Length: 633
Ligand SMILES: Nc1ncnc2c1ncn2[C@@H]1O[C@H](COP(=O)(O)OP(=O)(O)OP(=O)(O)O)[C@@H](O)[C@H]1O
Image (cartoon, rainbow, N blue to C red; front, side, top):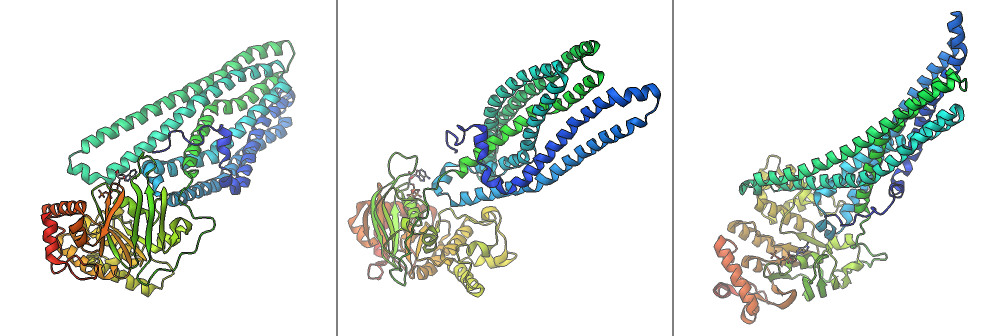
């Protein structure tokens, strides 16, 4: 969810808009050119009445009297030229601003995407996808339309009104003053409208973000909704939100309509009053007929921007809301950053991977009152495999995410080869540590691209090819060769066209392919059937032997992959040892294992592999005896 007090809401509209400067800087010459063209068009429109005045007071009366129209030719040509110039300048304005407008939109969108990629997981925990989607798509589209049309229109309208009233005051005396008086209620109405509309515009754009989020969640979770027959409930909740948005839009339209009506009415009333006063002034010979005609023609030119003011202002306020919403994301500071003077990544402790140490690590989520991890001490010697076990919700996944610095510790330190991960470049940490998450997310790309995601782009193609097939082989994901285009097959959105076990094996292949010095596997075999699990385990053991591994285990068979086990209980590591020792000495471990065994038995998976067993510290197998004890306890 976005923050409660939106950043930028305290700013005035000009101050909020000024934040666009870095993005529109390069487009400013074009935008200013467009503005000058629009202004030129307005001036041309304002000049036409002046020519009309001369025609009416001069050649027209003579021409009508003498039926000789030759004196009208040049004035008419001038009016025509002014009209053509106005049209040409409008065209020039559109041409000048169109291209830079789309460029600004696209650059702002890319900046947002870059920032979203950079922001830590803690940010994404708080913000919904729909809100981010609507800010990077709908809001920026709105902003572009305002930049190429609304912003220019606002400035040009404002200047046209000022210059037009100035002309009226200078040329039409009392009539000019009447028009000026009419502009006072216009200003008051426009000001009150702006205050009210701004609040509704914000509400509407936030609600459409929430609606986008509901659509995204329902589409994402369509299987669950269908399976539980909850489609109707989802529709009901969607309808509620859509109705709320509709009501806000109606409120918005009503507010806009009222101001449009007022802004239409006031100039008309002003003109009616002016007509009466003008007739009296002409009758008293205080002004000429030509001057009266010029007054009405000028007033007609000014009335256009006045009547459009409601639309121009609402566009500007919508754009201001879009700017606020955009910068709320963009101005979110990243707490997980590269240090200004990063240390060089330490030399790996051994050829078999890095030495990882969690030193007095404490961690609390942003919105949590109590820490999840409390002064955790854990060492992962190079080349070893440690299984992390604990009851559900004990903080295993949380701990695993501290190693690649997806979150920063709130106390203590995570060290890789003696270096605090916060002192290293994030790219160095992430190339040293690979993670396969419990929920294997795959991208809408080919199998090859998904598996080689973490592989250095500079690696020669033939090495990449070998790595791809080796990783697929280790993860027992040979099913990919049977897909229509083998490893080039594109998998659907987030890999939904694959089964859970297939996705999990590809995620495992991806983690293995990046050849990390530290491999973190969050319950890597949870979606596999017994046979596949055994096959993967056999091959995985070979890979694990060459790196430092932390495996979160929810099945006894996953524990069996490890040399040693660490027990997480109430935010602390309470015991570390071999499975055998812990079974003998640690009651909480015995309890966990018996729970895991029961779960495994209930689901017919996760049994200890045949002919294999928990290795002892010296690598020897502890055998069936332990399994029996584990199961019994
Ligand atoms: N993003 C988050 N924001 C706030 N709290 C969270 C977040 N993620 C997890 N938690 C909380 O942290 C605690 C530990 O969660 P975690 O997922 O690390 O446990 P776990 O041991 O991996 O659980 P499981 O075995 O069920 O996967 C839980 O109480 C959970 O509610």
